Image (cartoon, rainbow, N blue to C red; front, side, top):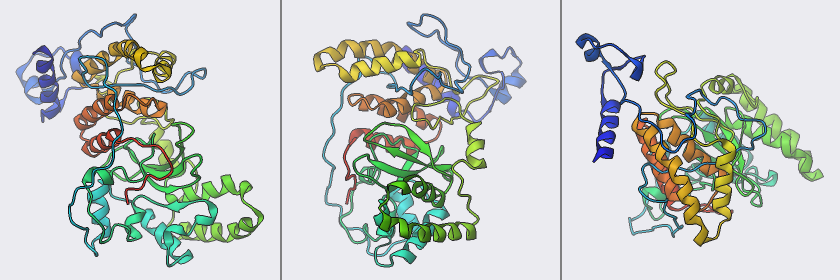
Length: 409
C-alpha cells in the first residue's frame, strides 16, 4: 500500500499542469499563492543499502581506468529479476498490406518514427546507381539498405500483415537502444550496422551511429546525416577493399559528395549539432553515446547517480553472465539493492537513473535480464513522455535476437 501511494504521488506530480518550482523539494515557501502556481516533487526517501550517500553531481565523464560497463534495472521487482527467453515471432492471419500506400505514413505507423529528408534523398542517389534494386546499390562496398528502406523497396507491399511489435524488431540488433533505427547493414561476421539516433521520438534524429553487434555494445557517432555516415564508412574501410573496388570508390564518393553539397549537408563526423548535444548529456552511458533526459539543475529533479560504481556494476554483471544457472539467484539478489534504489529514484521523479541502468545493460549484453531491462526502461520512458521508446524496448526485450538476419520479411 505504501508503494502504491508513492507511485500515485509520482504520477500526480508528472500530470500536474502547474509550473515546476525551481527549488524543488528544497522550497521553503508556504504561501497559498506560491503553492497554487508551482508544483513540487515528492519528498526524497533515504536510499537503501548504500555505504555512503552518492552525489547528485552529473557524471559528465567516465573514469579513464574504467571500461564502459553495463547495468541492470527493473521498475519495482519484489524478488530477484526473472530470466527471460526468446520466442518465435507471432504471425497471426491479419490479411495483407496494401499494394499501394503512402510510404512516409507507413513508416511512421509501423516503426513509430518519421525519417528525415536526407534518408529519402539518399534513396534517390542509390536509385541513380541501381535503378532496379536501389537497396543493393552499395553491395560491392559491403553495405545494404535495410529497415525502413525495405518499405521504399516495396518489400512490405501486398504481403502478409504483421503485428505492430514485429515491425519494431525489423533489423533491430542485439545491443540497439530504442533511440536507434537501423538503416544500413554491413559485415555479417561483426554485425556491423548504421542507424539514425534520436533522443526524443517526436523529434528528428540528432546523428547516425555505427555498431558491431557481435563484438560489443559500443556505438560510434557517424555524422548528422546518412551521406556523412556512408562517406565516413568508405574512408575507414577503403584500405580493405580489393583493387577493383578501389577503382570504383572515387566515382561513388564524388557523386555522394556532390549530392550532399547540393543538399547543404555536412560530411563531418561530429558537426556542431553533435557538439551541442554533448553539452546536454546528463550521464555517460556504456554504449558511448550518452543519455539526454529532462533534468533541472536547480531542483536536481530528473536524474541521480547510481549507487554502484562503474567497476562494481561491471563486475556484478560479468559474474551474472558467467554464472551457472544455480549460482545466478544469489548474484541476482545482490542486484536487488541497486534495483530498489532505482525504484526509489523513479518514485521521486529522477527518471534518468532507471533509463541509465536500462541502457547500460543493453551495452553490457548479459543475456538473462531482458525482462528486467524492459520493466525499467519502459516505465521511465513513459514518465518522460517517450511512449514510442517504451513500446520498442518492450518488443525488443520480449524477442531479443542475435545473428546476421534480423529481417521480419
